[in-house]
Image (cartoon, rainbow, N blue to C red; front, side, top):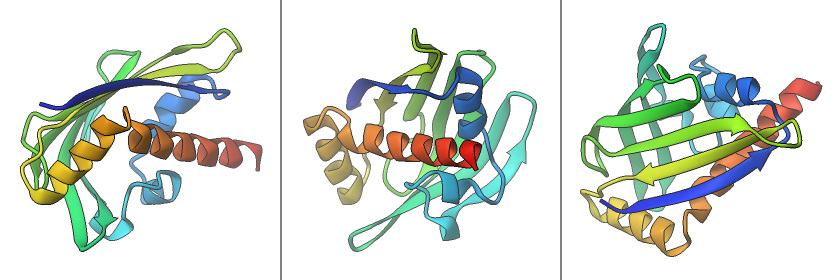
Length: 152
């Protein structure tokens, strides 16, 4: 299973980052640039979990995954693949959110996905070769959108 770990810092406090990651409202695709709105669907949201479908447009089509989000650990949000057209069930991404010395957040991302299609293999290759740049770039853009929402 290809695995990449990276750290992103944000001026947002940990609770705001966590709330942003766990916002399963219809506006979620507006906050997170990697989510293609027509593929986004919420099946169930509980006290410490959610089952949803998310996906992205890629050259030549779309990739999607039905994910199980778990935030039973107060510092970590993990989303695990249940079904997908590009990676294997059990593949996951986790975000461990801790306070940064600046009053903001330090987000430790673990991206651990096993590709099952050509699109998945290409994505995994790019993510591993760039040490997670597409993942961290998307997270940074989403965090910037959360910052902008908070200041408006």
